[in-house]
Amino acid sequence: MPLGFQIGPTEILLLIVIALILFGPKKLPELAKAAGEAVRIFREESQKIVSAEESKPSISEEELKKLAEKLGISTEGKSKEQLAEEVIKKAKEQGLI
Image 1 (cartoon, rainbow, N blue to C red):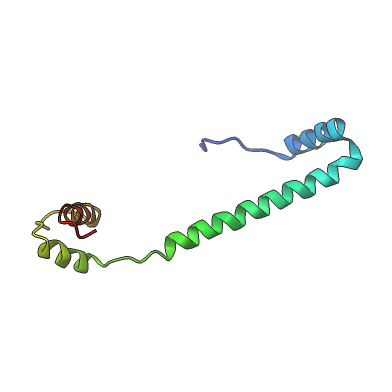
Image 2 (cartoon, helix red, strand yellow; image 1 turned 180 degrees about the horizontal axis):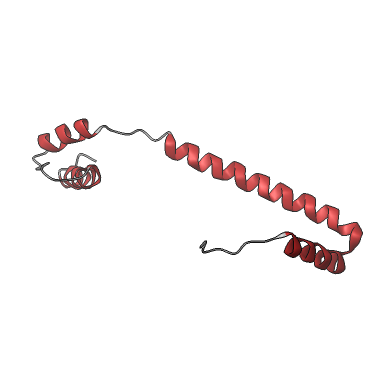
């Protein structure tokens, strides 16, 4: 069972009727256009964020292990994330970053 709520055709029709009553038939197209523009801008900005995340440089696990070993960090039984955290911490302690 989905956690959110679902809007069916009846609910959409009810929302349109309420919008017509509140804003009138002359103002409704302007509001719809503004809402559509807001959705478009939101999608564009969301896509920019996703693209920025995907374009971040990444290091392979093997390279990370070599770097950790050079810094004197044990790599046994540690995930890539754990190693990355320890490498950053050690590099900061040594004034490398």
